[in-house]
Structures are given as structure tokens and as C-alpha cells.
Image (cartoon, rainbow, N blue to C red):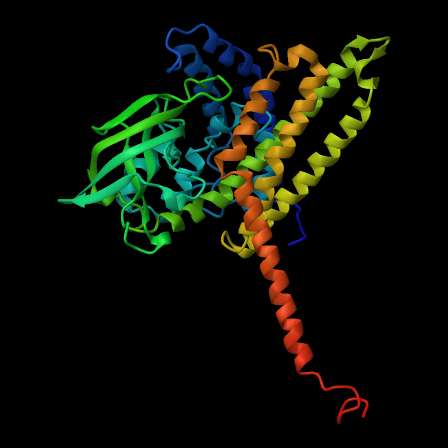
Length: 429
């Protein structure tokens, strides 16, 4: 558990990823994102954007940098969670990097689910084009009318009728569903309302073009719609899909979530650390380049201490996430859940603080369109909800600590009850 070194076999891959980002992604990023401000249809990509993106993707394929997010899988590089964690930190430094390597969320989680538990028919129809980077996907769980942080509350219904699942309900903040390349959703539904609480939910594949799937519009994040990726509000009205679109069997929705959530949270947190490193670099660059009150900004007030504390927190977070990744490799997703909850509670909140400090050093520019920091902050603040709110993860951690303490006390009490009293036969008697 404490050996957190990257494997020798994965180190060349990490070096190749860093080289790819530097040579093929960084040079196209400014042009790619600038086009978003001029195009007529916000919910599309222009020919030039696709030319830039597909060019970088092709270079990644030619270099063998493709689909390596899948842990221990024949379809990817077969990396451990620990090895991939190192790479994810580099991907977090550029918002285009993950997609050029076909390692973007929510596709990564959806592909992992299909690769692990999908039928051959499901893999052929949906996993194959996802692995090829030909389409995008979405995961639809969160609902506007219930407290979705408790997944048992999910109310979108699916009823089996004549060999088809009929789905009715609403979902919102469905990330990626605004992209015209998004062709398939995995939808969390309630199929068995009378079953025990953790057997009521299922996950079903729903193509975006299925009749009855209606995108009501984009949800905004701090006033932004994040087009064309988007976080969509979707209504399902008598949506019919074949019975064979069920994933892994009725009532296994929570089990499926365990397959995807652990690795996904590792990926998110390491990409977040990459963003924290980028924010720290921007903070230092700004502090060294501007003068106020006769001093460089870096030397004003407690800015040097702010830089120091940011670096300390980044390295502390890195070690915690690497240990969570190692726990998943050694213990498995279920047993590593406490470690995963620790990083989910810690990392997005701390990264938000570091980005906030970087914005402060930049002054008004830090919250403007001239700096990437405000967008980075919005993304990290959103992550404090996306994989479950902080409070849920803190509850999981604390509940485990209380249970461990109680069990330890119980064992000590039992051991003490079996010890002979002083002076009795057999003990100093």
C-alpha cells in the first residue's frame, strides 16, 4: 500500500504523453477555443475545430497513445490505477489533452462499464465506436426534483412492456449530452420499486435519437452553458428501448456504479491536481511579471507563503490520490471506497482554494476571459457535486472511523474479560 512508485513499464508512456501534449495539443488549444467565440452554432464544432482535434487524435494513435485509461484491460494499455494516476495529472493541465487520447469523461466511465459487463451485442454497437473515438456518450443520473446525492431517491421509471423498457422522468446536468457527437446515454432508472432499497435501480442504454428523448436546454454553471459539451436538462416521455439494452440485469444499478465510480474519481482528482499545478505556475508567472507599491507582486504581503502552501497542498493531495489508486489496485474498488471518499472530499475543495489564490494574484484579470483561471475554478467547484457532494464523502469516512473505533474497543473488552485477575492461579500467583 505504501509503494506508490510508477511501474517501470509505464514510465515511457508517461513521457510520451507529456511530449504529445507539448507538441500536438498545446499549440492548437488557443485557436481551438477562440473559435467558440465566433461560430454561428454554439452547439457544434466547426470544420476547423474538427480538423485540429482529429489531427491531434491521429497523432496520438500513431504514437500508440490511445485508450490507456482502462485498468488491466486488453482493450487499452493494461495500466494499473496507480500508473494511470500519474498520467491523469498531466492530462489535467490542458482541457483538450484527454480527448485527443480518447480518455475523456464521461466516456471513460461508460467504456469501462461496457468493457467490464456489456454483452457482446452492446460492445459491438456502442463500445467499439467509443473506443475508436468516433462517438461520444453521457451518463444520466441526477434529477431536478429529488436529492440525487442519495441515489436511492432516483425516480425516473422504467417499466418492461412487450420486450421493451418504457422510460419516463427527467434528468439534469447531464454532461456531454449537448455535443452532437453524443450518441448514447447510460441512464439510471428505477425498475423495481418494491425491492430492497439497493436493488430498485438499474442502468439502461438509451440512444440519444430515441423517440421521446427531449433535450429541454442546457443547465448553466456560474452563468456559462459550456457549449458544445453542455450539461443538459433532458425529459424522457414514453421512451422505448429493447429489453436487451439493460446493463448486467435488472436491479444491479448500484453494483454498476461501483465499477465506474472508483476509477473515475481517481481520474478526476489527478486531473484536478494537474490544474492546481497549472494555477500555481500562473500565480508565480503573474507575481514575477507585475510590480505594485515598488515591489514585485510575488513579494507583497503573504504571497510567498501562499505559493509555499499551495505547493505543499499539491504534493499532499498527490500522495493521497496515489494511495487511493494503489488501494484500488490492491484491495479492489469496494474495499478502497474509504480512500476514494477521502480524495473526493479533499481534492476539489483544496484545488478551488489554490485557483482562487491564483486569481487573487492576477487581480481583475484573474476572473476575466483573458485568463483560464475562472473557467478552471468553475470546473473544480462543480466537481464538489459531480461525484457526490463533499458531505456524503465525509459521512462515509467518519462512519467508517466510528465503526473501526467501536470494533477495536469491543475486541479490547473481550480480550480483557478473558484475562485472569492479578493474584489468581496462572498469573503472578
